[in-house]
Length: 206
Length: 294
Image (cartoon, rainbow over all chains, first blue to last red; front, side):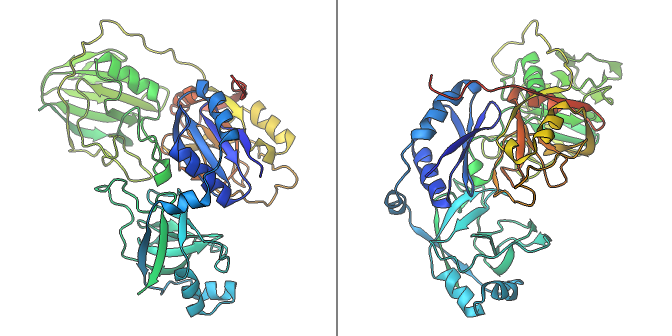
């Protein structure tokens, strides 16, 4: 396993890892006990960005992330229940997903509902979580060749190795396979997002 | 309670504070806050507010409001001519505005964003711990509109300072640390990035601004490659396939999908927040403190 630490101005460090599971394990370890001086952790597909208070914190934080023991899979799976999200599988891109994967419609739904997804990281818009599969790669599809200017709130999609749900109406380029009424972003809750990194999700067909 | 009655907003006026919403990137929430934090901090200091108090960020002037109660007001940032009750007012100074009088900002002669602090701070409801408007995420108070009645909080217990020093205006050379993805660019593209006097295009807002100049070509092997999205911070200089860089400001997305050739030092992003379309900007390479053992 290689862990490259790259500079990001005078208030950030970008840690690069080989795989998404390595990102999740390092992020979990850092989130459980953040190095002194870290004000934001941004996990992504192959990286964890650490934003620090000031340049004076960079050296000690870099030392910490280089040697930090990743959280074990077992540690991460014992905490937290699995949230069930009901989905109506009638997305506009289901036929394209069928064409890309070679699966039948029912098999796409079965693959999507038949595994536990883990929120790898958030981004794009508040409450949008990138959901990683538990190793089943049958639903890996490219983004749409052209983005939609308007994707409705609750749309469930696929792109690359991830699944995701649009928390509010926005532009988007993911392949849409269904929709849900589940409220994913609510400022009256703490945290307001359902799909926080590490959260586990199972989809259920309605 | 004292209120500001907004009678004009100019091109864009928002409510901002200095801190924004740090620590929530894992929910997809960016930091936001004032694009020129130093200017808002100064305005708050001048009227004796806490540093974190919320004020107004007016883009290219045009803001006008009345106060319902006699108020202490300071205007900083881009030097917009100030008129108070129809008479010229001072910049970078705490000024008493009589009840019912109007404060009006003209168009600044340079710079982009002016800041208005009122003693007591704007007392709109905070969202996720901040009163800043994030124009992209749609968090915080709505964009300020004509007719808005903005509540002002009670005056703080801290006194108004007798004297304060306004920061000196400096040129548009921004210090930059190369990376994290400068290795995606050809050597001569990195050299061109540091050598060029870039021009800020009119594709500019609180998210960031696009620069016009030479195309920064990718290194061999990175030509058609796509970068998996990764976290970005304020000051990141991202280069999309067009080869023309974008500099991220306060409302930047939490993650970005194009390589970042360099990151502007945090302190210099305040000056970046004042660059208006047509401004010239250069990048000067600096090194971060050695990343090693202390």
